[in-house]
Image 1: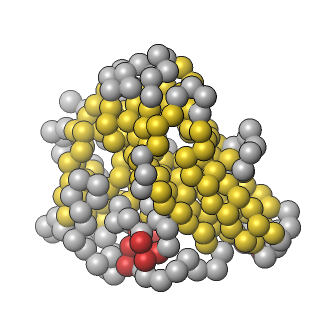
Image 2: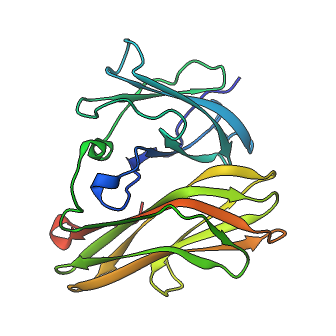
Length: 256
């Protein structure tokens, strides 16, 4: 039997879309799955149940969802709400419980940070935020392609926090790379996704912080390619890219 233990902090944030009025009702959740003895679990697919509760202990679950989650090097990403839509208003505190396979739910429950509560927001992008969502399915191979881009106007020096999410299908034994970068640059935050078998609807989640030295318009993009394997066609769906400006007055900001 295995149980969930966090080797690094889990990351929860809103999967933003093209304007807050069109925000997809999902929350991206990342973590590392490890045995109680310490090492990360073996690569594979694990049944994980997620629940939202109104209190840190006790009570009845307000929302429940079970996903078959692909785990690589102990790491996993999921989109909560992608299987069972949320039926909550997100105007009260909620706590996330996680159960792996048949083990008991992990303790303690995780309180949701403020970002998911933007599911209750409406209206256009606020000042300092730019978001885009592309529902089209993209197919790409070894040559690669830009699957989404977005520009943001910043009033002065600071940082741009870029968050990219989506759903991908990776052919068996292939490795797909997703580079979140300033437009046309070879530098940025890169993640690789691979699978021993063909996987549908694997969650994509990549984020990075980019410094900006002055006021102006800055454009960022996600460049997708196949980096190894048989180079069969890979697809990406429902890709979203959100940019948030952080002034230097807030202090130094670094990539997560």
